[in-house]
Image (cartoon, rainbow, N blue to C red; front, side, top):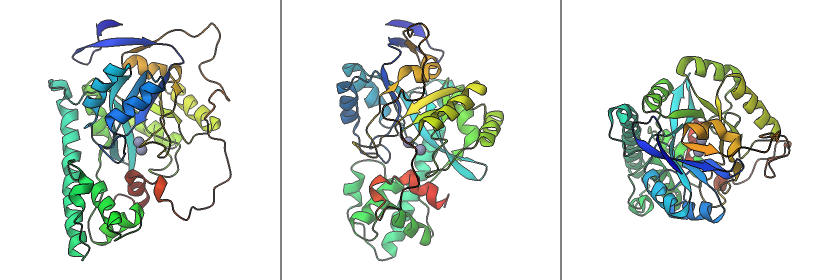
Length: 343
Ligand SMILES: [Zn+2]
Ligand SMILES: [Zn+2]
């Protein structure tokens, strides 16, 4: 392990790991709509040999500091991240922003951290307003504080409390109720502002799950070109839990042709929800890891980074599954927000 300046306005440690060491660069905790505590998540990762992980909650970095400290004790290098809900071209996009610690106090990070405060406060306003509207509609939420569990009140807690009180059966219906009552349960920031502020802070951005048709929807090749031209977007999440090898090959190619890096992520929110963290090979995200202070040992001469069939957990393309009678267990608040549009 060596010490060097990483260009982020601070001296930080570089780490070196094997090229095929397991890494997962898209993980959620209970700071947003997940259920992993930082300690359960780091224990899970350490026990399975993960070497690098990025905590990327929706619109908050509240778990990042704790995860970094716990990771140091368990040998998991935790990269500060956040999955920011962005507005672009009349739609929402999920953007993974990497490399900016929430405890930064330097001027370069001020803009980014101000944006994080702005969306957090907007979500808290929306949540308080949504709770008032639901209760005024004759649906009491006496469980709100219990659901909130000491966290700032976010729309997700209000929706969850309404479900627990059996006012509504699932997240979709809960969100629809809020919208029907004139409220809103989501918030976003302009994409260009988020990328510019991340860059100023020395961080980098990647488009989350561009090939996922549910949630915020597909980001097409033409969209990617526009986004790169308009914002200087850095990367694409080319390895994702729901992708087939064909999709991974597509996004790896699109990234390479545009000089973008590749990011890898399971998008795990809780144990088995919808999946556990996945052991992606570090080398699949080599350029991004290098940018974030992680160096990789070389592969044997001639061994390809990635080829079809190399990932035993890859999704196999299948015909459209029949609609599930109860989609709730797989549902996250961000999925619902995307389905219902920016209400
Ligand atoms: Zn997402
Ligand atoms: Zn996510």
